[in-house]
Length: 65
Image (cartoon, rainbow, N blue to C red; front, side):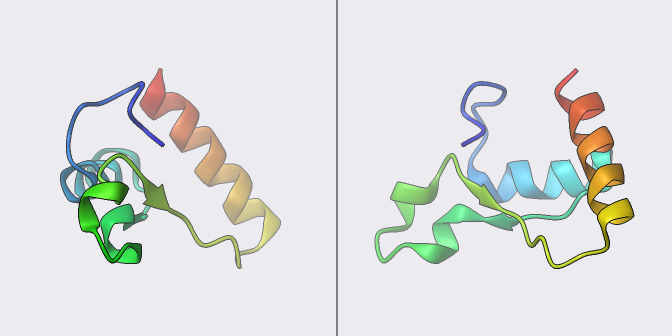
C-alpha cells in the first residue's frame, strides 16, 4: 500500500516506480474483481537472487526518501 507516499493510481505509480527507481511492480488493481480495491496497491515478485532483492530494497528506500 503506497497511499502514504503518493495519491497516484496504481498503474501510474507502478510506471513511475519503474522509471524513477528501476524497480518493477504490478498494479494492484489487476488482482481484484473490483479494480478500485487495488488502487493504492502494487505487487512485487521475490523470486530473485538475494543480491537483486537487496539492491531493490536500496532503490525503494532512496525512492521514498
